[in-house]
Image (cartoon, rainbow, N blue to C red; front, side, top):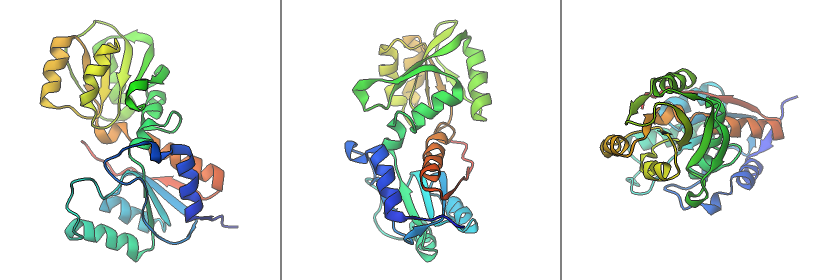
Length: 253
């Protein structure tokens, strides 16, 4: 017997977990494109790209759940070109698009930051309270050299990380924030971290890491944010009984 759940019940369930109303975000969180009422299969992915939409259509999905959705602040609001093609594909196949940005970064169980700690084997992970739960701190089970930790990151995330900075010869305390969070480097240094992990790096980051004595690892925006949406999709499936599949559309950034 095929199990289905109502679209709005899924949205209500997710929002009871993630509490998006607590965040001032750069995009609308929640149901961004409304599709069919009954959902049998949900596809999760990092970004609602055309490639992910096409893969979801091929899988006969009823809903797509992503971390990076649409309608970002400051973007062109006109429905033209790429935006038209994406929306046309979703609406033409009656597929809902559900997207959560900062709420999915910060969640203490399902969030990208919490899930990354599990992937990397970081112990005692906890959010720094002053920044909405976006900066996290934890410990390595055993001290690692900067080079060994770089290899560990690259192995676990299946993506070569970039290391800059001059810090301690052994890394014990680690701070991290997934995605484009190089701006948190100063907070990570103030927290006493030996190393900071994020997805991206900017030109000033190199100098800050060099001069402040910390190892900075740019491990990939996409690579560091693959795990929260998978955990969320699986929890939806476990609670409702509908089908779930994560599709990883590779992105080297």
